[in-house]
Amino acid sequence: MSKSVIIIGAGVVGLACAKELSEKGYEVFIAEQEKYIANQTSARNSGVIHAGIYYPTESLKAKLCIRGKQLLYEYCEQFEVPYSRTKKMIVATTSEETQILLKLKETALKNGVELECISGNDAVEREPNLFAVSALVSPTTGIIDASKLAESLQHQAEINGANLALETKIAKITQTSKILVSGISGGEEFEAEFDFLINAAGHGAHKLTQSYWPEAPPLPKNFAKGNYFSIAGKAPFQTLIYPVPGKESLGIHYTIDTDGRGQLGPNVQWVSQPTYEVDKNLEAEFRKAARTYWPGVEDRELIPGYSGIRPRVEAKDFVIHSKDNIITLLGIESPGLTSSLAIAELVAESLK
Image (tube, rainbow, N blue to C red; front, side, top):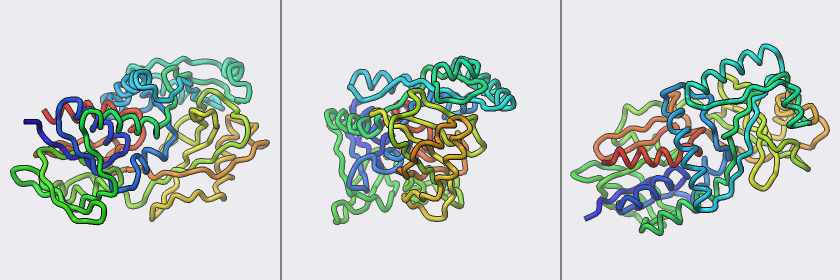
């Protein structure tokens, strides 16, 4: 008889786990509290397929990003999920920043990621609207339609017999000989038993841990919000353009989506309560950041876009914790989208 598993959260990571486990013969049930799948963190990011450049060697972020990148490109080809191998330039705009790029190149190489170092002239030749004194080129960075990916993962999981319940909020997890979960689905209370549980609830994951893992890494005191501004008119670059990374983030960078629209973001805005409205007064901050590598931003209209809240915990790395038939996923922020299929592989291996 097949083992049963409940996955809490139908974001990209939860759905990737559902696909992986249903393929391996588990009886999979997915509980999602929203009306739609992939409606929070998965829908509110840059949609970048990361190369694995920035993360400390041997960290989960480094390992799972690099493995996940390979799996994601293969999956997109197999199941026709919209994506593009755009490449990425990390640009230095001063000689001091060039030294930072050289150190970044070393970190990437330790992770098994090779970057090409080019001059500012070469960078501008490739992207005429750019200003740079030097740049690193990442050939394996790309973009993906995260919503289409989520839909595809859901479809593959359901082909394998997985069941998805929307508007289903898990309130309590109790460990007996099996795992008892209770909550509300479609407005009615329910209770059910499973052999395994995967807590992939994103922003709700930490609260659920209180009933079975009170020592989980704490949440930050405030929420890390990232805002985006759309660029009106023709996209200025076809390559993704990143500044040298800052202490809290990769900096306000330029990306393009699978429909060819350009945007800037995210910034890091610490807020006491999560809200998704983009303050138009942030435009000056975005223009100042973009001006360093894109002087032409002064002649373009920026339109408030969307925002997201990073599902951070105080641990710097992904937290993947396995105990007593429960696997908990915390802090799955960037590069969580890129790493999703690799996280699912690790979860399946842990269940053995």
